[in-house]
Length: 261
Ligand SMILES: Nc1nc2c(ncn2[C@@H]2O[C@H](COP(=O)(O)OP(=O)(O)O)[C@@H](O)[C@H]2O)c(=O)[nH]1
Ligand SMILES: [Mg+2]
Image (cartoon, rainbow, N blue to C red; front, side, top):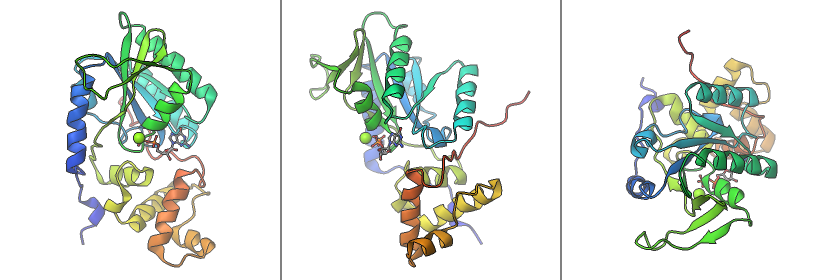
């Protein structure tokens, strides 16, 4: 019997394709891209096409929702990026300290650009782009004028004397290379859970967690019973919400792949 989740679905609704095209145009206006990636899915949550679209422009990675991720695994990712020469930093957008640290890192990164560096935040849905943008800009940022000749609605914010940030983040389409990426992204909100059966997503997750011996992760049946919810479909939806507010601990679904020594 074929497992429905083993059919690797390419999730590409029309508006996402359009959004991706729009990003290409807007990326032409910036000097660097800041890709926001959910630290719990640091592999599937990144878009492998972005580097190509950027055509050599610098890219910085922000591992967001680090407060929800396993800190040791986040550290492994940061080390892996460092080895690859990719600038990466982890943060919790709700922490002021993290935000000012990230702002400093962006300024340092942008120092490689001559004159005022223009940056754009990009990432797949729910990675934390808007939250990061708002947290980074806070109230301190000054609005910069519209640039003539550029899309009318485009606004720039001054993040630092030599760095401007585009007001709207760009939405990247996630690539779903395998069945694991599929449930990982569905669980973290990177693809709409309506596309999937939430019970299956949760079953996949709990089976994986049981294998790893993650004690704080209840089975769907346990969770449903405890919440007095006997409809497993509803319980699975609630389960996914609880996962995303950290109720089951700090869980990273993906760690860096083994490298040949
Ligand atoms: N715990 C935690 N939640 C975050 C963080 N960043 C974003 N979120 C939450 O993740 C969800 C998606 O964030 P949002 O910024 O709307 O994602 P976007 O679709 O990429 O713009 C929201 O519920 C945010 O509150 C973070 O660093 N930590
Ligand atoms: Mg948003």
